[in-house]
Image (cartoon, rainbow over all chains, first blue to last red; front, side, top):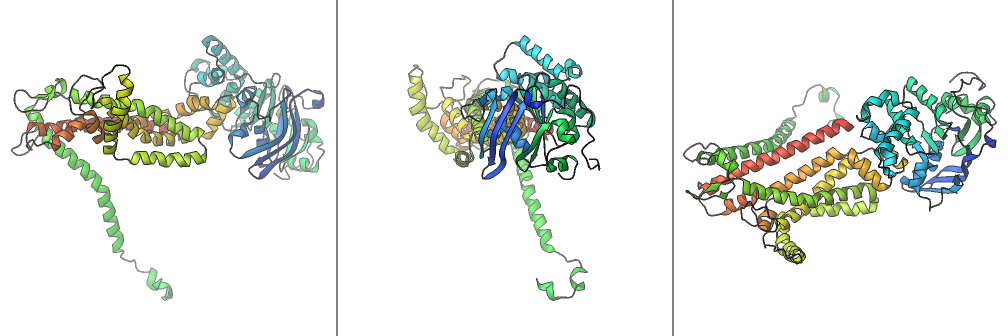
Length: 276
Length: 320
């Protein structure tokens, strides 16, 4: 971080991201209301309300343990997989409250895809990795699958590197390629929303750059929510930034505003690197 | 500590001669050497009776050619011209029982492993694991009588009787079934270990792509652990090949090549029990043939274990 006192040094954004977007005028792809979350008796999210405008990037920032990853994982009910978690409040995705116990989480997760910090290619071929989602959804037609795999790999900017070895193991790809493969694999389920949990934190700068540019391209057609520890990254790739602190949403607004004139002292302190 | 009150120099300047350390070291070495010695002794006994006998005894393969042993389809271990020494009836009996046992143990063992790792809560697991260990602890002779006195008369005869199939009292099917039940815990616990070592992140990624729990288990977790699972199948198969008492009791002692699971057969182990407990003379051909069968069995299980070990090592290289 810089030693400047103000938060004025904001790097240029990636192409396709308007950091002054008036987020309130956009219709919300995700509308979270009064969300509380507990691991057993420990409450980790307190009354979080947040709207995510559609076809934009929302960055979740905050110090470690502030609850931003937990929040992200409630958006596709990933926390259901952990025993002893509990959640109150509402979260609307396409006007459906996904906290409703009757919601089919399998269908929800097709609609709300997720990319993880650690790339997690399955020990299968590149093709089979990308075709995994459509296949579990019941797609059997080889031609349809082949088209889908190609278009998703193209969207994830990986096609040119792997088109001649689609049927070799995905484990042989480099870290950055594996992460783009995971993005392609997520795109193949044809989601509307993509959640990214520190997708570039384990990658080298060149690969990080590619992922960031990719996010700029994808947000034309997808709603993206990204958790990141990297302030520069948040300011480069997002339309809207939400700052979490100790389980509470402190402030949310257009990225340019949060990074140049935050409304809260704590936000400014965090962004300028005074803590966290 | 007796030295606590003494001066510094008299307790750390002179190296103590810790005799007991040497004794312990030697004792532990003997323990380790014991298994090597035992294996060596067994191989010696097998070879000296089957291949080349020192002294005035005649080894099995000095009387019967290897060609006959490997090509004849009859097994009549008697003296004189009527004797036939083809391993195939015993080998086929063994393979039939082992294959039937795999048909039982593979689905049951793998299913149990998947249930325990992917589906069961901690409480169910705490109940199931000891139950499987209990099953593994039942003596095999008990399984043999279970096959003879329960599986055949109360299960196979009534059920297959409906299809007008004739089930003998001694039959390979019941032997295979109980051996399958016996080795199920082996597959379950080995597979459980490898399935558990599949990273959690892989499961989460699969869930995030809209998989059901069954998709995650069968399309991601099991393929990721496949080599370890295959190794457990092979180890269980090798256990089934080497299983003795249950098979000797349930399958009977009729060395035929018929390959009919509803009739009796004789396995390699079954024959060895028969030969070693019979009243034939120590250097009779019947007794000597036991060593040839023993070597065959030894090589067979050794081969299977080596293959499964090789598969397991490959698996470790890929994932750690």
